[in-house]
Amino acid sequence: MSQAVLAKETNRRQLQQIISGLSDGVILAEIDQTILWANEAALTMHGVDHIEALGANTKEYATRFALRYRNNHPLPLENYPLSRVADGEEFSDVVVEVTPTGDDEKTWVHRLRSLVLNDASGEPELLVLILSDATEWASAEQRFEKTFNANPAPAVICRLSDLRYIKVNQGFLEMTGYNRDQVIGRSVYELDVLEQAERKDLAIQRLGEGATIPQMQAELKLPEGGSKLVIVAGQPLDMNEEDCMLFSFTDLEPRRKAETALRQSEERFAKSFRLTPVPTLVCSADNQQVVDINEAFMSTTGYTSEELIGKSVAEIDFIDGAQNCTRVFAALEKAGNVDNLDLKIRKKGNEVIDCVLSADTVSIQDVPCYLLVLMNITERKRSELELVAAIEEVMQDASWFSQTLIEKLANAKSVNSPNLPSVSFTDLTARERDVLGLICEGLADKEIASRLKLAPNTVRNHVATVYSKLGVHSRSAAIVWARERGLFAGEHRVKPKK
Image (cartoon, rainbow, N blue to C red):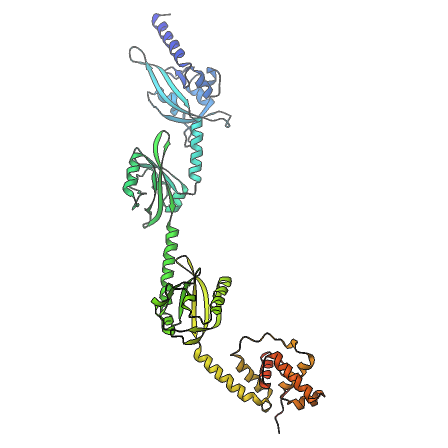
């Protein structure tokens, strides 16, 4: 063996001894890609325990181990790391997935860099591949990728070295309408996620420092024009040993639209409230403090807004009778609304008018309130009372009228008495019911006594008891009471006197 060859072999053995204990994997190969030697770490990274299992050269290695890039594209033979370094290419950070042929369950991730050792004359003598096991790193990155993509919160990641976006999740694409190609590779100046941010100067400073960017509102421009109100925040992170910034977003557009709709609704309510000719008052639900009144209310009651707003309804005392005021708000608290309640309202100066009150619960600027609507029925009530008085006068002697006319008069009178007494027809005894029926026929006491074969005094006692139970004081009132309840209708006709 020549001295030169001996020296060469000695150098290689020394090299092998130096690298055999390294934690990084090392594979040595001839210029023709013949695999000469691998340390234990390199063998372990391939799941084998001897050099022959790697194959004699790159071609045999490729039949035993399938290599793919991280994007799942397979490597052709000419792109295998040994082939690339044999072609004189130097690389420092190639990441590949390594899978044994026929065993897809096992996959390792290797990060490789190349080295070419030259001889004394400067000619390439030995090819070196240095491998590090990136399987755990890749697994963690894969978990991050899945979490990032599955996270419904919109997010993008930009690389701090050139401020270009390298990742975007589905949430961001759905929120903005961008597609992936419109985001990846663009800079933060082209797609400005800090547009019109509340504290943009601070955000830009923090971005330059690679520091956390606090939450702030911003307007995010959309691909089809317009913008979307968002909350944006930035969090620094490391990806593939590169400093990056994760921007996350909260879509405020639904809230802005809801606030706009609410404001428009309240504006329409305010306009309608002021223009309606019906007296209307708004008070808070918790303490019945007057919030607002309209012109019709002031015109009807004589109060000014300064005299009412800020005071409680009870303090103003415009609902006649403290118990009536309590009853109104107790009903509102229980049911949320009141319909057509007869009340007396005291105007400024103590004049009392008859009103019908309807009320409902409304929300004004998220504050529960009661809306009270009044209808002045004083004139109508006066007319009804006059009509009833006339009917009472006419019905003093009901025997002059047909039963149909009596019923019509009773119905006309009943419009002023919607709240009937609590007494029922069944509260009368059988004899009292007979007496009432004959009264409704228009018979006098003597005629009733003859018909029922009773003494006149007995009939008078029955009539008095019927009046007492019904709460009436005359024959006509008893007839009206019966007709209001549809009693004895059509059973008899009153015969006019000859």
